[in-house]
Image (cartoon, rainbow, N blue to C red):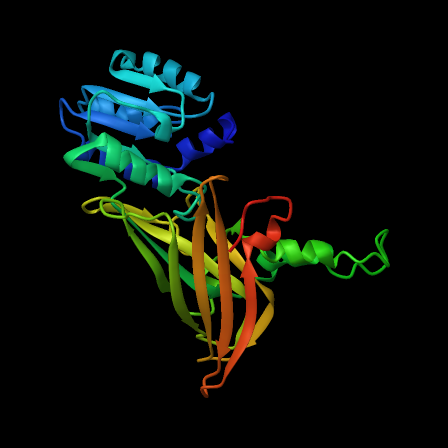
Length: 322
């Protein structure tokens, strides 16, 4: 759950904030009804009022909604904003919205229940011909040579040498951590393949929370592939968007780093083929990820590498299976 400092960091992110402000101004029309999913401190709701919205339904499951109430009052628009503290999927509205606004992502669009909430809101809240902000996200991937990113998954559980833990086998913990994904600021210099598109999410038509894709990441130089990075490019409104890709202006999102079980030495023109998938587990409001990999050498030889899944990093959670 975000605290007030997390929300402050989101407010301070000009990449995100400027793009959303322009998209709201370009999309909301005087007299519109607007739904703001995950309103947080209510800033998007206030921007919708400034664009002329007649009514904004600001939905937020956490207690930060009381801060949104004060911000709405301080900006003279509390009379037009109805604040609802609830999971949006449990909310019933008496009217349809012309615009639905959301930023429920993390480093990538597939974060906890975000896509489930978006699909439900589009189907139940949005009027025919209405607009969604965002309109589309495209997720991409590239091989990453990043000892620092990999160390988070590997180093604490590797051989400790002369330490208080000498002689203690910590490898069971490593098995968990190399099957998890972490936010890391992967930089362009750490990429050792060209980016490949993983999946395109059109929020106007997407019908499933899950995806499967097979991507081939071809090495652009000799190096060590510690895993791969994931990021997204978004279109909020026509001509308005941003990216959290390596090399883009810094934004709060960062990138996801997905480790391999062990580092893989690659030569230029070798490829690592990733069978990547995510399945939403509704009982947990979370995703199970899998990434099965094989190495395809520049000469055409194919060698299986690893079969990994976040299932292996949640040993105490029941009811989950690939």
